[in-house]
Image 1 (spheres, rainbow, N blue to C red):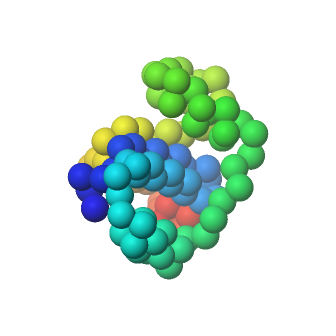
Image 2: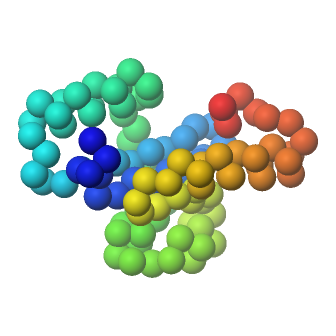
Length: 106
């Protein structure tokens, strides 16, 4: 599946994780449905609030994640090619600064 991922964006919103996955247009329909099924089993469809929509649009337009984070007051954990290490690093730094691991971070 990874060769068909064009972009993965991960945002942490204090009470939930937002994961946006973009797949290339050449992906066969049954594989697209399989991907959707996996996402549905591990979460739910999210209707982003306006600030999140604007942030995602800015990221798609090529704005730097740090600029978008400052502009919309969001924690953009990762954007671009899939990189699980970025998510792990964010979790470790967050827990270290907070002193405990909130349930929403798991």
